[in-house]
Length: 313
Image 1: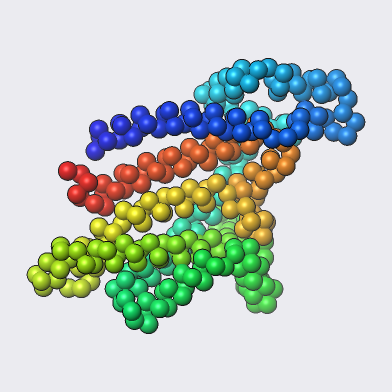
Image 2: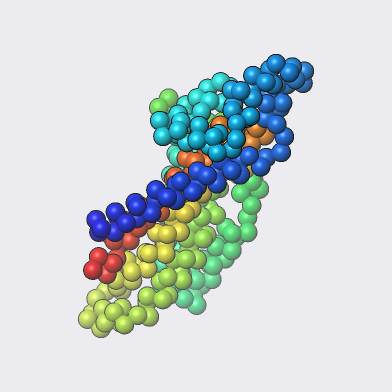
């Protein structure tokens, strides 16, 4: 286990270097001169020259990359040219909102998707199977923004049960926070639950026909033990992989859902930064997102060992 983790971490470092080069290089392909854009309509020549010097825009590309990487290694992701705030401070402000939304959405997806997949696989060909597949088709086909608008019309406008938009910190008022987050979390979790259901069903159908499952049944074990202990545990590997990737996607920012429900999360920060040509913020946000993906994949590998004893040999 330790040897495996050391090897995985050793591959992470060059991956991060490559990702940083890719992020920085692609950022430079955006059209327009950021200094001219930031200088405003008057575009005073002295202001443009100052911005070129401040942002190192006149230096060669490798030199500018070196400046940026050096700052990243010191924990300095740069400064937003729009708000004059450190990029790290902006990320610290916005990321907890998206993390909370992602955790709630994944919790909803896991509670709905995995049980639905198990029921569908165990009751293959029954009404339960047809119902679970219909739910998965509905979840995969429904656009998040459309479902969000419908939920606002029903639960906020018609019934008045939940706020239509906005965000309240859980440290200020936990009840209002959950009331504001439950609809966007369900919108995101609904789509992921559909994907989890399909993958869980597929993985369970494969292991339910395995020899060790038939042996477990022959020993007289209850169907519940056979399904949950012997079958599900061996079917978890693809589910863990999918869950880690989906959680990483949520952390990168659910742009449309955050816009519909006016949630000040990571997605809105990314969109605003791209439109404003705020290079430092875009680079910092994408780097944090890529690092989160890599970390989640490492955690998924660790979870494999916990879920499947055969991998420890």
